[in-house]
Length: 167
Image (cartoon, rainbow, N blue to C red; front, side):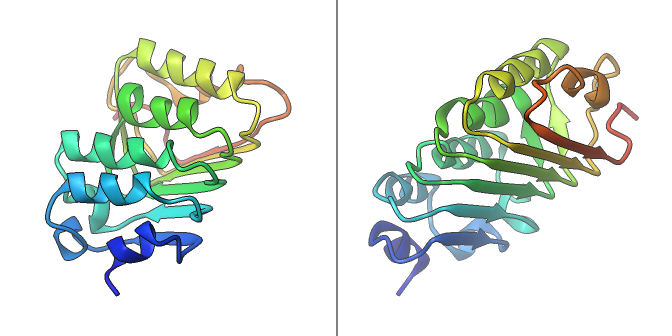
């Protein structure tokens, strides 16, 4: 059975995709449609080529659909460019069951206001308990991840490693 069929029929709790998206589906719309029917996925891991081989619009759709999964508790996003204001903030705002968010080896794109909106979304979330940002960079010289995330609420466990600043 193809992965889209497994997603639609609620046969998986962990969705781990590492290959080029073309290995899984023909269009991003097919993936979004399959995810809209899912209620079983609790953990999502997107790494290696999966997000990296998608264009910005496709990446935004793919990451955005995670937030609409009703039972997703853990999300790991690796090895990609991520638009903070579109992808990550919307994921946090829409995923009501999300407890753990990990972003690793990513370039976090956006202007300082986008990072401020992400910080506000994280602070307002009643479900998120842990945030891990590892080996990520924010190429905007006005963004320092340690400073941006430093003022988040005390009951959120935050781990930021790597440079975290513009290069």
